[in-house]
Image (cartoon, rainbow, N blue to C red; front, top):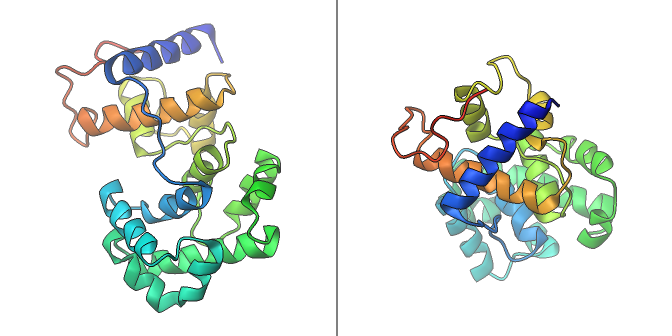
Length: 216
């Protein structure tokens, strides 16, 4: 990691923090809700995932045991607002079975494991890729692992920080900036999502963007 790269990352972070303030993301009441949300938000907007989570809360099912008791059909129906509900129900059940089999549903015990071990285990769960695994590690379990999403790719490419060929792991290392600060990772990811939603869309809207003029 070059000194210039670190300087640019610090500038991006500072500009976004000045514009938007602390995001204190990811929304969720406790680690399990964050894990559930990380799967429900796949390929949909957060507002749709929130509706699905609200359905689970109304049914008092938002616990490992409660969700497992629902079964595939009932779970799919409750998370319908999140879209792809049958597929996501299957993924949620795979995660829940993993939590029970590996950790007896004890998320505090899970949190105490190393980041590398947990990441490897999560990637073995059907339907969990690098982004979802890292979101679970960062926001649900409090491990300093940088989450790379579509906004991160788009923003870093447009500001000439990475190329089209940059892999997830390479971009993750670049975005981390050599830091290992949990709060910074959480805030930086959330801020990149915010500026991506406001300006760095599929078709960029650069006028007024806090990152205008930042380049390698």
